[in-house]
Length: 81
Image (cartoon, rainbow, N blue to C red; front, side, top):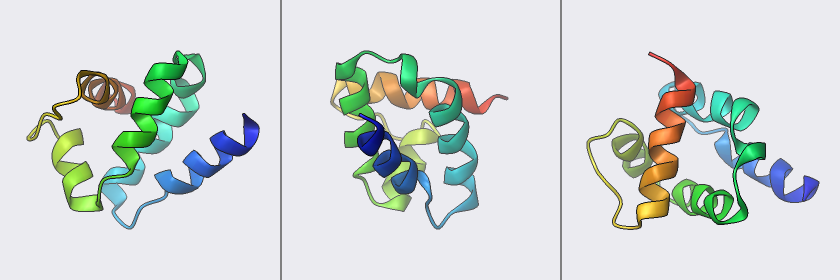
């Protein structure tokens, strides 16, 4: 479990400051309390290229997978206003 979390933390380090600013707070505040299915949805969300991920996290694109869409919303909420 710890190895999986460490891998996700590494994947959260993106080349875009905007993504880092949204993903890091989510990992710190929310990720550990998610059920397994939503943790898997977060991993799926991170598999997107940076530009696509930014569009999703900014709310401009809604993923078809409802779990991924829900996790994206939670990432936005964790990042704050």
